Image (cartoon, rainbow, N blue to C red; front, top):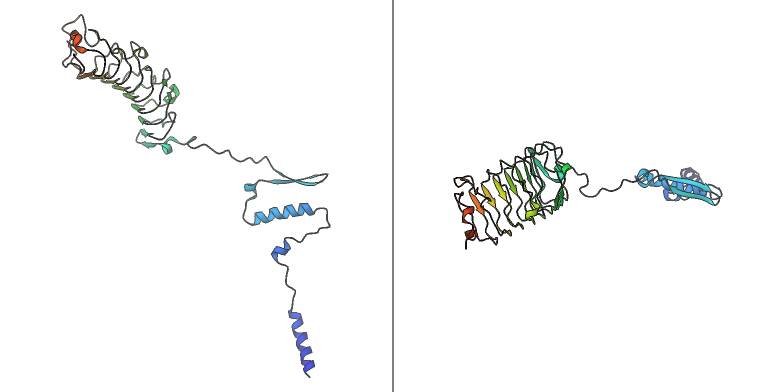
Length: 299
């Protein structure tokens, strides 16, 4: 009786027992080793598995299987070329690199070595304390509304002819603390020109550089290497700073008119000549038209 019960239980459970399916890991290594296409199927399967894992095929590059006499070769498709990396700040919009605010552009201490492309409506540019070495005509060719430029504390050695020729509205130009040896042609409506702390010598200033600047009120050329006071200074000047140069002489026509003793130059408020080798006391007729004597050594 017990034997009969055991036999019946065995028949009941046998249909419920099924062989376990092969694991996913095992399925990935079951191939037909006897076929000639084994290498091709292995490579294709491996590449498909990477794609299924969430990796983009384009990211890795397209792979091409090329048959040859010895078997198969795997070659990268060179038609898909990666983008070349851009250098830092290359083609970066100026108003991301600098600060643009209501016609003013502030590019201070951002290590630029050239004037960046400016918005056409720019009126004021402050590019102080950078590494700019040269100014060119194309820097401002399409920015006609500029009224103030400040390049204090750069490395400017050269200013191309015509750089400021189209800036008919420019009123203030500051080139202080650079490496200039000579002055460029200046725009006609300047009211302030500042080129102190450079290396400018008298031969680097043409005779008519300031002659036609009838609006110029403030001239700062101190701490340079001038041997004499620039010629043909305009009547409009109020402040002239020439201290700490190498000025050794001055004439009766430098500030006054030798042939007109009644001439009074009443607009000038300050002339500074201290720190030069010249003894001002030896040139009394040079200042008779001035309301105030220049600052400097008289003995």
